Length: 112
Length: 114
Image: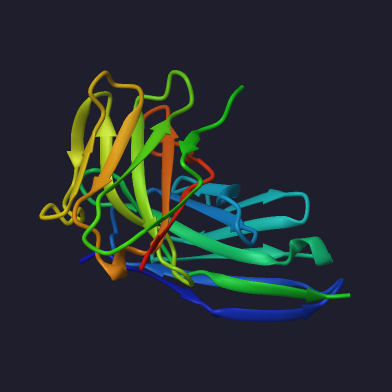
């Protein structure tokens, strides 16, 4: 079946450093790839998304890149801050019904 | 704009009991989703509604789970009878349409089955 793989599962960086999270997907027809941030006990919140007609999108310190040929996409956070600490989920819209498939999540810790 | 509302926020039941969750999506959103999020995992889609019709329920354990969205707005998700492995956060989300649209999540209902 459809699958979204996410790496790494945990990531610890020093404040000010960059963080990169990578995901791969299996459905070549997927066209929409959102990233969600989930703080402990809170709801997932969209931080950035990308559609298949572009290869890169940037919003301040956050950027996402998409390689449709290789079926992978990545989240880049620059100048990380302690408040960036959370679990980040990638997702891909897959299948006949445009179901959202989520990765297993990456726990990012930004150390002051 | 009000977000997705869910209730209750927490529920503790014993196995074999039944439980129901309620969701009110963002006004005007045609598509509504129920997800199950087990601790340490990503959300897993259970069912997707488009207005009051079911679009996809292929991952819903239909022997014990049921969901409805009778008037195309609010939705309820029911588990009967509950099992220990149903302990999770049940998230409701909504979007304007189902294709390449942002899904907005509710706060979730945290279920503990003892």
